[in-house]
Image (tube, rainbow over all chains, first blue to last red; front, side):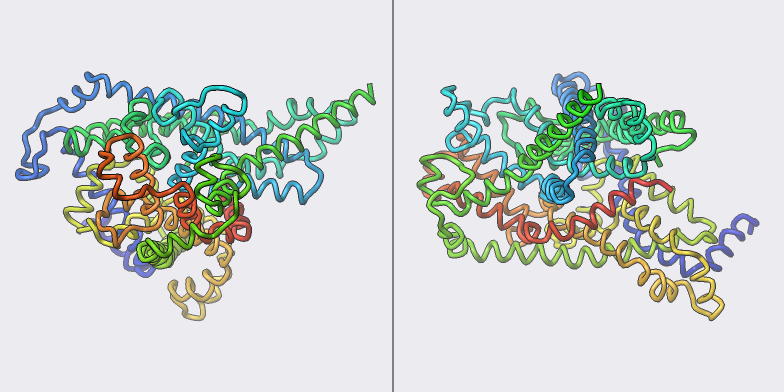
Length: 307
Length: 297
């Protein structure tokens, strides 16, 4: 037995109790993250149930070629990037704005109540958000059309008008996450040096100046880290968000289908191999971008990566 | 100059009060809308549309639901409570054990274990292979375990808990070690009692996740008896969508009366369930968890 193996075994034996305590979690990871890696092979085959994963015919990159040669492939990539891009931008501006404004509020009870109201959307599921949005955008009874009617405008049949839904989804995600994200920025601001603000005040700076020249520059590292994390995941759509809000409504599907919902939908219609290939494309893009994001985070934050 | 500054600052502050108040209202408005419609009379809602105040307040809708689909809803409530309780307890046990183990500095392979876990966040095989092994090898189709096991361990929560455990001074353990205690005893007798807040925080995060989960049900469950609450609501809503988009012939939908507006909102309220009452009290633990997660070691 080589000494490396011996060293390994003796370490395992010495701390066997601690390794045993890791075991249940590692088994879950093995079952649901590592064993599925074998199934990636399906992406390069024309999978059929009879021949199984490794018996089915090898087709090389055909599944990927098909994905990029049909218009739906580019469409879902575009939809994913579009929704995520504006989600990221507003997902910075709104929570940072909230954190800065909350900091200016003097009455603690006002602050507390407002903060806990803003945290509420975090606690409900996307299905519930979908039900709520139905209440707002339903053609006959919805709030949006009531408002339009009040101003004398024509009501809109929202659920058969795809063009609005990218932005409805983007705004819904900003609504759901802003309270949550602002907590992270508040936490960062709590560590700021108060004396800087004092001396700025003595030097005659007004509130707006200290926000733009002190608070925002000091928030920059936090903003960069959180943004890089989201950019790393820009090829991942939020399945629950899309499906919870529009379900499988065929009229809206074209505009809001993202890579994740497309994989799910094509599992039934276009087969396992094709949808595995799309999922693999997504994972590889994710891996590349997250690694790149981590590298740039290290560069900008003096060697501190994202993970 | 000085007075100008004061006026400007006052303006900024009053703007802060207004905007924060406005956004806070926007965040809570849908809940109030949903509650108010669920307590309204159906005819009024169909005539006037949704409104922020209940129209002819009544609890008829809730009575109607419990007479007509009370059994189904109770069953779904049962499923949701079961997976939330069993799932959270198992998740806490599994997560706290591994987090404790890799917080011990002398565990030589702790970084390898952390890497094995981390890698699953940055690269995955994707939905289809995951679904294939779950259904073909683990037999999760139409099994209640499908609603528990896939979400029973979160790597994020592991790192969160490790941060908590790592803040316990090792000297606490050394004394116990000298007395002959093994690491499992130390975990049970010392580490866990010192981490009650951490356990509560992570436990609530898991519980919220289980309560709100419908993705696993969408993927794995066809049997109505195993529908969790969230998925029950989802199936009602997608029926409504299907019928109103004209994909189901009117003849077929004529016999089933469509769930009325008030019914939809009442089921939504029932689905949010205890969160409505609990969230003001439990949110501080989530804040605690978010802040601990945001601070890197």
